[in-house]
Length: 185
Image (cartoon, rainbow, N blue to C red):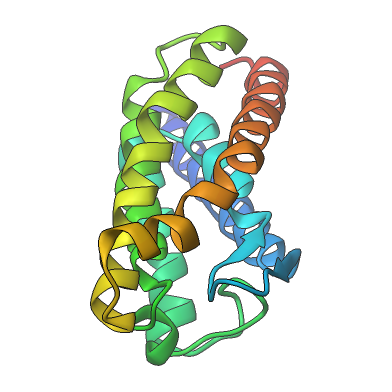
């Protein structure tokens, strides 16, 4: 009996360590960002890090990790949101919809990624599932907070980011396959 308890504890420690590492990678990636002059949204490495999180963790673990990221960055005010910022104002600002959408989008990516590492599947799922959900979140927040129409929000929240987000999905898929293969998952 004590042996099975030890095995369960080791699994829990491994899962918690993976979640903590993913949270750290997502948090640090927020410092890799640069603004664009025509939009309040920035080009951020966080998109790739959240996508990688989805490939490494289960859907439930992804949801918990990215929710913890929002709580720490938004509610606790730690400077871990894109651009090294934090605070509730950031979550409720024009780009807040992107952050909330990350939780939903990448939990869905984790759900649809399949049970074995597969580069083509990872890329397809990341692009087809995450990009539309994230852009819908960004569009909604920009339209509401900036009081602008769909076309203006589309030009600020979607169009300039499509090529980079596709590249980030491919990069995250490539790394995700390598990490899962190395971990034997």
